[in-house]
Length: 408
Ligand SMILES: C[S@@+](CC[C@H](N)C(=O)[O-])C[C@H]1O[C@@H](n2cnc3c(N)ncnc32)[C@H](O)[C@@H]1O
Image (cartoon, rainbow, N blue to C red; front, side):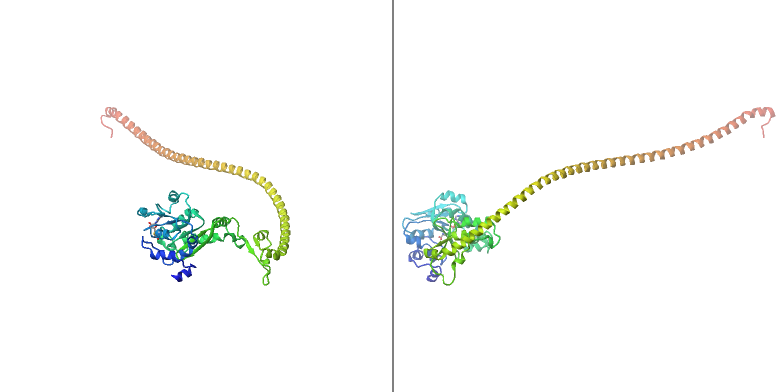
């Protein structure tokens, strides 16, 4: 244990250690290295002797709340939140239990309102999404200078808890992001393309952070006593620089000079060079300003030209639109005529067919007339023959009378 304490930078302070070892009440469940880490991290709260307000998410058997209530200064108050209603009866003097889902910001609002705490420990579901949403909802409930702790961060590497190694959305990634937020003031566009919105987000996040400390399975986030609204100043002190001319490391940029905090001796040492650098920088700024003026004029001329071109372009665009309308109308007319032609062609085909049929009928009737005519001629001949026969027969009695015998 002493090795672990040393590894974590903890100075042995028996009270917390002893309290865990000697604890005989409700069961608490922690990993061995958590105790010396807690001892070191909570040392200032324990040493100060002032009551603290501590919120623990995840009560279970109430063991850790019992230990906290034994070690923190008298008058401290403890709030435990658990989703399990069976925890409701685990309150005791100074210890309040609230039942609800700590991953739900609305439930947290209902349970905590605007209460603020010196220490918040998340030992709840350990699901990545829950850890993140609880942090988002509770970090604002941490007092300035307070400590936010998340236990069992190893779950962030487990699929079963919505995590995975370097997986987006894993809770450890959320806290790694805070490390970038801590350093956001040092992000420089010249170092490579960075989305300005992202830089702003990180700076906003970093304003309230003093540190983010990772241990095996634990992360501690300490809130600044006062929000940081400007980058930290660079402090230089001393009067001699025998090896390296430190003033050369300061860029001749008024912003860099403004970010310096010089001790009196250092001011004497650096002032002449800095003033010289500033004068040069001011000259450069003047030159840059007149160059910018020239560019502005050029831009103005180009803008006027672009406006003029814009008008021409508008007229051309209107003409093109008009011609497009005409073309559209013509296309519609051509399509209409094509349909008309199609109809006429079909009508002509129908009439040609009808004429063909009539012609065939005419030919058939001509043939019939011819046949009739032949028949009629044949019948005329036959009639003539009959008439002659008849006449012959009519003449026979006369012949018989004349000759007394039939003609041979
Ligand atoms: C690891 S135990 C807490 C152990 C306790 N802190 C200790 O050290 O003795 C986790 C507890 O978190 C609770 N829990 C799980 N999900 C929760 C949630 N979304 N909101 C609140 N509590 C939750 C469980 O019911 C369980 O009692």
